[in-house]
Image: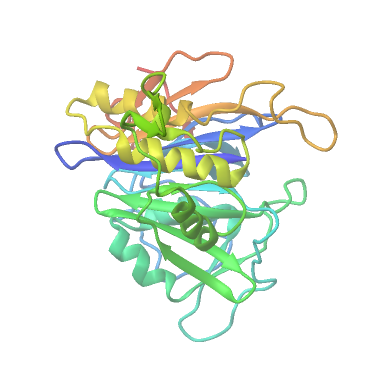
Length: 324
């Protein structure tokens, strides 16, 4: 499963990141797609930007047949998007829509399509009113993944879900996304925990007994600690919302990694039906302030930085980014 978060620093710049939790990797690396890259699209979309107006994109993924398959990414305008597992509820369209004005997008290209073509969350909201996400695989060897997406910029975030009744866009005031159930359920479930606090509880009197807290942190008693989607949503939302705003790039990146670390999955704690162990394969952070992509893996926890400014953006193909 996975967890994604978004927040802003004291200057208003956005930081966006995610844990990718799964039993195995796919050879994913940091991929950069230059504005002029010639990437085949799943459908004809006259509204897509040409290379003169397209955005440079950086993020984690693989490349298949010249197509960057981003798990999460950000662009040179400070817009970011991540796809998270949504296996039970995702309902993509079986075929492309022929309705006038419909914009058909394959699920595999959704993050790249957003990051390449749009500069702001408002632009994304506008196009999603006409968007159809289609269950079209990129190749016979790569089946369609059931996902939902968090899209964010400096102004906020939204969640995009393809449900039984069609595409749904949720305004995400929690700035968090995990997995099942749908975002509406997850957001409502936060109300079960409105009594949580980061303050130390006051001493209580029970008859003659004076009860003092053991120490700090007891105001969080009752917060879920398992690795299910609902539990991670609650804990990530609490930590993210209570972490003090930070000023420097270093402090904001550390905030993101510490927050996602609070819901990271260790080996052996979450087993799949086949007995395999789900772990947090990597944690990523996209800084809209410096247009830098950071990540660390389970086996190599040292945070590595990939500044977009250090990449040659004059090419016509996606490429793997060098670390700073």
